[in-house]
Figure 1 (cartoon, rainbow, N blue to C red):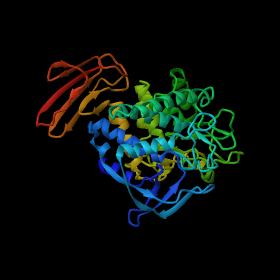
Figure 2: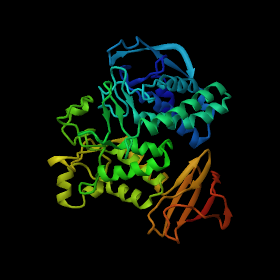
Figure 3: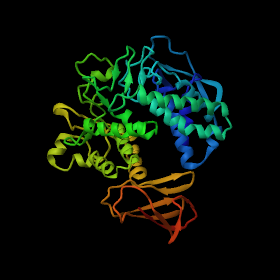
Figure 4: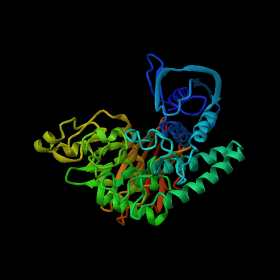
Length: 433
């Protein structure tokens, strides 16, 4: 992870934006107006510090890239960009990314540019006015976790700036971003809305709902209402998928970009995009819905699409590897798409281990915070930390989804925050819900 942070930081331009992708072999990459890719550097740096407690990475220096800034009306440029003589610490790289992202539209939400996490929304905001509701939640989550790091650095000006942005962002998300039963997805350059109940196409989009919970920015009542709407509109139990959006784009007036070139139900256009489906599972777990979280976790497992010859013939791809997408409409519904997709497989692993089984490591401490089905009576985890073994037994005598009441370490009552020790020891941990 440390290696990736240092490597990716070197693909950030002096202005704070980043190469959307590049080729290691040639050093050539693409400069774009994508609005989320620069923020993932900050996200992964926060994750690294949370897990390891190592803030030293913030002081490590790497060079920037230099190149001509995109001209007005130019969405991207593929080129070999120069390595700058100017270097910045990872802390400076991250703040450059955040500052570049503090570019808000008339609804108080961050501008989407030529796409956000959904690359297919390539003409939603490429004229410079469109805004992304999802990006608002993502930016809020990053600021919420980055502010304590700025405090540790004694950067009071940044702390006060980011705190103010957070307050305004939360207000905008829960007013202008709210559609009555769920969160909107985006505002287009011409003012058209994606993810509104008034739409014939893209009436609801999953990631605005899940990230309202993951980020903590959604108002309490709205979080539950929006997830109920997501369940009603986007979970397709017959085909075993969680759709990214619905209905898909086809013949309507909205022109959101190349997403519309896909057949209805294919890839981002209304199929399951597994990356986003897992965020739905994480959101359910964060709300304490253990039965729902596991049902969905099991439902999107590839093996569940391959239990019979008929199901396998429909699914058509490997039953042992996470696919990027599964088609969601017409005669293609239930067919797997692009497989061997590491981004989704790592999120799937994380959802199961951290959010359902509840094993969390933060700054060298272990906590167990399960969100499980009520009918699970017990389960065990064997966890190796450096050279020590932790035998963890979770017991659920009162049939609960969440809520640890007691933790025993080698028979002694302890807090649910155990300092990890890597010195060839064996620890027996009992956790009672």
